Image 1 (cartoon, one colour):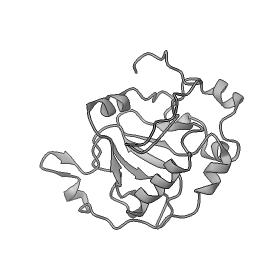
Image 2 (cartoon, one colour):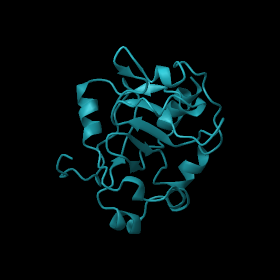
Image 3 (cartoon, helix red, strand yellow):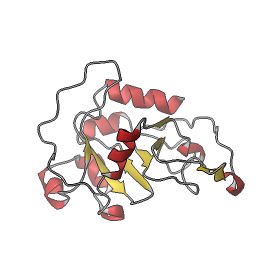
Length: 182
């Protein structure tokens, strides 16, 4: 899919290595992220990305099939606001979702987390800021600076992303590792 190719290009270009804040995380629903701490990297990927073909069955009758929600925990899609509006922002399901994600052309799932450890990691993402985390405009224009870190000290970040089978980057030095489980 087009969305997966864009994601891999972002990975290969080091988009996530500068730190990508998980800025809109709603308990039991979704987490939105993708705006880099480096605004230049965010600008590089802001352009409209064509929608991928819908592969999930549509309509309310298909929100759940055989006990499985249409957008299960760990599925990834792009956040968007209309046809062909995808860019750099992503969502991941923090729980099984039937009503959102996958139903709109711009929310076609293109990836998923793999394995129990990855699903446990999703459970540890801080969701306390909810809709009141840093604004998209602020992150897009300024990235992450000392003022933002002071205002949102519990914000979680993607600090590295690499293809399986390649050499992992060294662990980040600024990551908050003493955080209690959430």
